[in-house]
Length: 377
Image 1 (cartoon, rainbow, N blue to C red):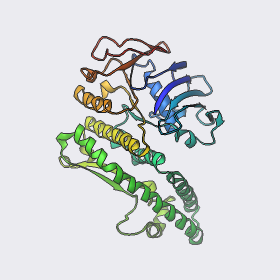
Image 2 (image 1 turned 45 degrees about the vertical axis):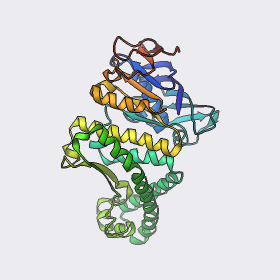
Image 3 (image 1 turned 135 degrees about the vertical axis):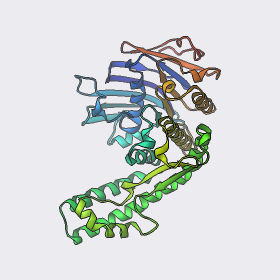
Image 4 (image 1 turned 60 degrees about the vertical axis):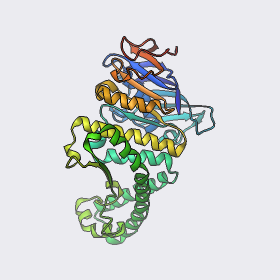
């Protein structure tokens, strides 16, 4: 998958801007606060329905504007091989979008067509943050590779909302019984999708972990379904916990509580990881997610690496970029200066500068990454 054009309007600090990344490695340089990260956020927004720094209403719309606008053109190798086009106008609550000239009914319809995975300064939350972040990460992959996942997820979410509403109202058992059954049926199937996907993902992330954190020894990827599956089925768990659920007013067991984690032989648990190690585990997760997507879909997602030079030391930068150079993936990298890890790799970089609210092509700043012939906008 290759992005050919991203056009922004009223997006964070940009009144309007246009960016035409090249098909391979792209380096976007700019000072702190210049807006280089916003370019990656825009791509991520189209692929995920939100920025990697939060929801649209959390500051993406330029101050004083009613809504942001993002327009993109891309080519998907697994699709018809023609240029696709999509535009999104989003005010934080209301939104509208069009794709290839037709109105988009749901954001999921838009996100299904564009695939972007991102590594950025907040990515350590994937390891040290709440389980919701890890579920969302896992479900994004499933959304793209398993056609039956989204309808199942929606059935489960609807049944969960209904059951929780009845719990808050202290409903009688007769009212809860049918929703227990609906929740259990959808939940068991949802768990099956996730469990199978984790099995597919496991070899790739363990290989990546060995590459980026060999000093921590063997690694294990664990998955918890959200209830004590070894002891009882989901329907039994829901019935056994009903009194507790009624007291709390919400459902305590089910796939909405699922989680995954990585453990290492040399460490007692996830909490013992340093911040830097947490970032490397998150990076291994992102890169292995991209590789699994490519294996299943037959094309690589766009890979966005925000502020790479400040997130990884030179040796880890070099390992990551060298590995990506062996793939056909389009890679988008930002930084205040060229990452030192680019030195000696001989990559054909397309270089851009962001300054004064505009994106322009131009040579890299003096340094190890000054190698490519920038493509003119």
